[in-house]
Image (cartoon, rainbow, N blue to C red; front, side, top):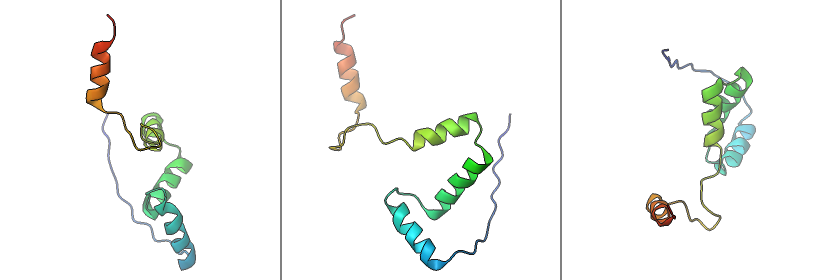
Length: 85
């Protein structure tokens, strides 16, 4: 199966104040207006199986805890070799 990527440019007429408020709100999520519109169109079109799963995984918070600690591959491996066999 081949996958093709096609780029399409769309021009929208949107009130400037709405765009600025949207940018401010999206800054907190790290998304651009372009990405948000792309995600919304993908949602409307209905994502295929794999694409839907990948998108859901991308939206998950990073692994770790609220204090900023994240999983470390070496630490996980050290724990694994300590497990009883």
